[in-house]
Length: 139
Image 1 (cartoon, helix red, strand yellow):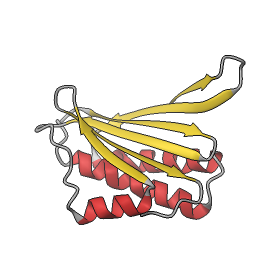
Image 2 (tube, one colour):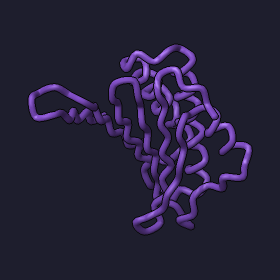
Image 3 (cartoon, helix red, strand yellow):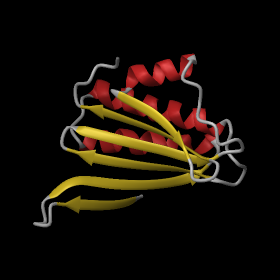
Image 4 (cartoon, one colour):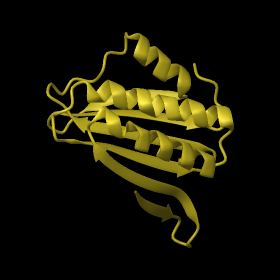
C-alpha cells in the first residue's frame, strides 16, 4: 500500500490516498477486502458502513475480474476525506467494456455505496468508482 497524503499546503491533510495493486486473481481479493475494512475503520465509519464498503469493493472487483487479462494487476485507489471514502478499482480487460448496469450484481453494488459509476480507457482499461459517506444509506 502506498499512502499519499495530500493537503492544503499548510501541512494539514485534507485527504489521504492509498494505492494497492494485487494480481488479477480471485484468491487475492481477501487482501483488498481487509484493506477496505481497515481504511474505513480508520476513517471512523460505522460497522455497517465498513461492511457495506467491504462487500461493495469485493463485488466491484469480482465484476472486473471476469474480463481481466491474464497476468494483469487489479489496481485499487482509496481516497479518504473527512466523512467520505472514494474507491476506484480498475483492470486491463479483454474487451474494454464496462460491466452492465442492468444486472443484479450492479444493483447490489449501487445499494451498498452512495455513488457508483464505471468508465473505460485508455486502451482496454475498465474502471469502477464508488463513494460512500458515513451514514449513507444506499439508493
